[in-house]
Amino acid sequence: MRYLILGASGQLGTAFASLIDPTEGHFASRSDLDLAEHDRIEPFIREHRPDIVINCAAYTAVDRAEREPDLAAAINSDAVRHLAEAATLHSIRFVTFSTDYVFDGSLERPYVESDTPNPESVYGRTKLAGEQYALAAQPSALVIRTSWVISATHPNFVTTMVGLAAADGARVVDDQRGRPTIASDLAEATLTAIDRGASGILHLTNGGDTTWFDLARTAVRLAGLDPMKIQPCSTNEYPTPARRPRNSVLESERFASLSIAPLPDHRASLPGVVDGLGRRGFFRRLPAVDETPSP
Image 1 (cartoon, rainbow, N blue to C red):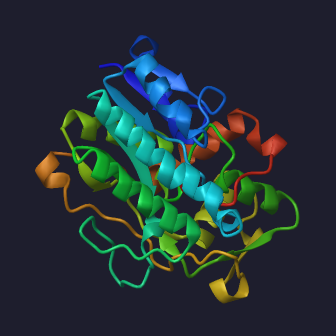
Image 2 (cartoon, rainbow, N blue to C red):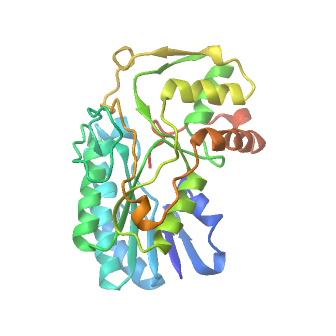
């Protein structure tokens, strides 16, 4: 199997690079292929001719997307269409990632693959369009919805919260629920799904529902700081340009049919994430990060 990984410098792309033999993969970052340059996509795919394209690249600035809808659509929607069409043209399998933000969060239970999307943000709408384009161009494509992605290799929500706790503290919303997903766990589960021949929509997240507030406090405690530096607030007290779903917990109704084991509970993986970030010096540097950990 020869892989082409797009978005290879990001959290998820880096996780795939740790699992795939370098001789079996080509790992392309934005400097190799800018997905906003649609006319470059098919020639790039044709040049490398992999067996499978895994698209980890996305426009993930949820709030900025409200001001830049055309750019968000160019990367999350139109580029995915071009990728899927190019892959189909050359008989290449296509995998791409979507988000919990395709749902409005109104359900009282977890969302499964057959639930009807209803995004309430530009980001969510562009990701949903990307799903639809991918499956229209290649019905056998695999579209993986995930949520709240964090890793031990890149700045993310955890580094932001630890940095704030080390300074003046922060207030974090306590009425938005979801499932944090560890990038390394997600990459491993994705490769398993590919091996099982999965296609269509598939939800992959770590187990364990939580809120942004609880996740922040847990990460700060694991980093050896005072978790009381993180205080709760409501969504109404912390307005943002883009609406977030209050409930974005994802579950899969397809694991049994695909013989896929559920991902570990995020609380089992989180200590390793915090430890890895600390060992890499992120808590000393604490660089600015994107405003959302979603893919």
